[in-house]
Amino acid sequence: MSVAVVTGSAGLIGSEAVRMLTSSGYLVVGFDNDLRSKFFGPEASTRPTLRRLSTDLGASYVHHDVDVRDREAVGAVFRRYGKDIAVIVHAAAQPGHAKWSMGDPIEEFEINATATLGLLEAARQWCPEAVFLFCSTSKVYGDRINSLPMRELATRWEIEAGHEYQNGVTETMSIDGSTHTSLGMSKVAADIMVQEYGLHHGLRAAAFRNCVIAGSAHAASKSHGMLGYIMQVVARRRPYTVLGYGGKQVRDVLHVSDLVRAFAAVIADPHPGAVYNMGGGRYSSCSVLEAIRLAEEISGHEVTLSFEEQTRVGDHIWWIGSNELFQRHYPDWAPEYDVKAMLQEIYDVNDGWRTQA
Image 1 (tube, rainbow, N blue to C red):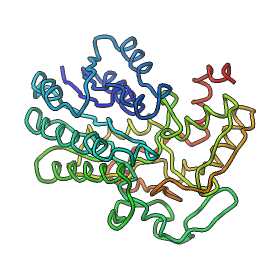
Image 2 (cartoon, one colour; image 1 turned 90 degrees about the vertical axis):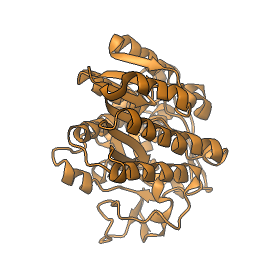
Image 3 (cartoon, one colour; image 1 turned 45 degrees about the vertical axis):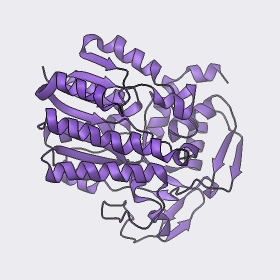
């Protein structure tokens, strides 16, 4: 049986990848030690998702409570399965962009960059024919986007009409000369490693530069998981504090199932060394204010808002990525969910929030 290795296997992206791969006939081996609860608090723990995976998938999923920085433990798994490993999805990370992202840059680099190098080397040594998919981030571009001409509208910031990035930022945007935070710079390092191993070391490796990924299983927190956290706050009728830009900062949002369908396309026909901006594009984008209003409409509750002028370091005022390159390589793929559909799903599935109001 072909084996797939998924890191961060109990997280939003990792768990969705696990389900897709087991349904495709793979034995999936997962790494996840719930560091997310350390980063973002107990409500962000991935343990409930892990229990669901184990219950639903049985022997098709083998879990290792392993830190991806532990090269010996990771290497032992790669040695055990060897060339039976056909797919690696590397979704483990420290993904937060707020206080933690400047709190311990050495640990953050070890998690996001050094661990990626260890996985690439393990793949090169034990399963060089495997497809290696890396979850990068739009934060690799730093805050360069903020230097582009923007105009302020009633509920969002918007790039000037006619700008070359009007339909989304392409992979040609420079990553140099901008503020990244330790999240962005550690992900840049990992992103470049994945490209290097794909282009020059023979691995069938690709990087996905995601923006906001959403889904009903997300253990969202204030510091990570924008859409899920907004819906959670509104459903529980709690106050919400908007950080910077008057809540008009824009993100594109991609449903995790749409992302995992993109993974499946690359697994079937990889382009070694490819880098893809990956998101909802203009089809699925919103400002913080717009997401809050949609959540209020869905739940029937109004939220009490407060505003802080201070923005997060390196935060994007506007980000809509272009899927053009990916769709050129994989023309049958397109996002299916829009922002309202994602919020509705999150609200419907997490009905326990309403009892906590």
